[in-house]
Image (cartoon, rainbow, N blue to C red; front, side, top):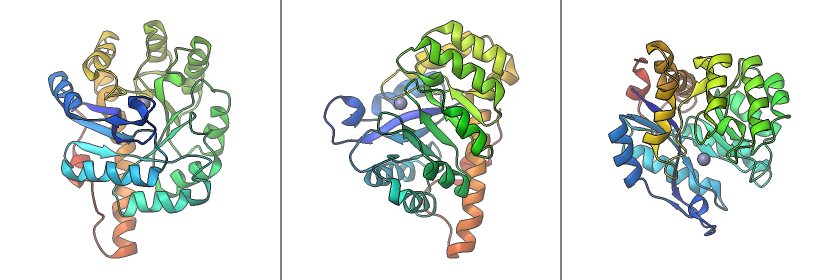
Length: 271
Ligand SMILES: [Zn+2]
């Protein structure tokens, strides 16, 4: 089992580039199949209404629930007053199992961290190089797993990525995905210092090639348990935690099984 923890899907209305316009999955699926990637976490692209984007992601997950996991995206300032409602809907009605936040929209805030805590969700956050405040999140919400995209900087900010390594070494609830990290020495340092338990394979598909991104994980020359952890075991642990909580609370709150998602997909063990 290989889980790609970082894949964009659906449509946006920004029309400045693929990242806010369209992320069709067809080519990604072919490339992922070739690379042996069996599951992927789907995230909305940038857009003006993430509630709509979250519904789109949920529809994709429902279309192939054995393959896809879905995360809800929220805008930290625009959605500030409806974050709890959005996340409740995402979990109970849409079957989504994590939260995606991008600093390009607005810096992550307490409402988002509290919502993640409330619903036992992992947060995938792209801090766009702003690493300092992540230490605060790690301290105020030690029970929330934060997966930081691109080791903190898609733009190859070397100093930011160096600091990010220090933080994932120090804080048990901080992780990084491997997507888009170009300076291989930094990925290797993260692997050796933080350990395979703190890295999650992610590709930043559909925009980056999942096979190329996965090759970086193999290039670390991990032993079998380390590879299993990075390629899916760590991700499954975080996703299962959310799913189990959701299934419990959804059954209790509504007396009906939760929509979307597929319990079988999380019942599998790593390896
Ligand atoms: Zn991305």
